[in-house]
Length: 275
Ligand SMILES: [Zn+2]
Image 1 (cartoon, protein in one colour):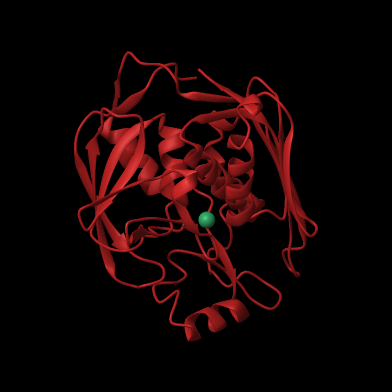
Image 2: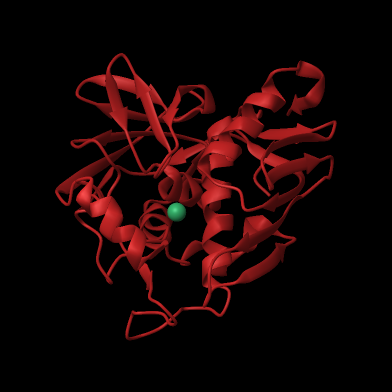
């Protein structure tokens, strides 16, 4: 467990293809003294914070003063796993590159950059009371616990079906970091007709066909898909600006409900404590 605020130890750059635009995007990572992760796009500073989340339909997108950055969730999860609390990310496009569809390359580069520790604390958000949000049969809830513990259930058409996974020691759950995003072939067609997912390929997503995985190499883990939903939740939750401590139970959740839960937690100061 980290105790104090941290930033990266050196500047570095990373480039990749945006999932939706299909265009190359370059990220430049700079140390930051102020708390939190923030993006700079077109000269505008956008804090990667839950109250700046403007769209959750296909990814988590933040916006400020007409400038926006989409698909921040995997990079946010990489910051979480790297123990980095403060960082500035300059980005020259409207979405974070998809890389291999997981948080692995971000995590690897952050690890290479190293960690610089500040004296200030205030890195944990401890949930003090149960908080829950729902949307039809989907829900995400959190109750008090001294560690970060996530139980996730997903339900999709065959061959995915129902999958459940519990991660008790989230800070050290390496198999979550390189679990890739996934999509169903029939949905991909519809999304591409709408002019999105132009950069999607078998190099950056698990594609699910009628009765099997399309990628020739198959899955990285038997539970890679539910693992990825946990990765998304970790990244989305890190937009609270802190490392959460609590026992999370999520069922068919996504970016929308993940963000709604944070808004619910912050709606009442009795729900949490920062330290
Ligand atoms: Zn994802």
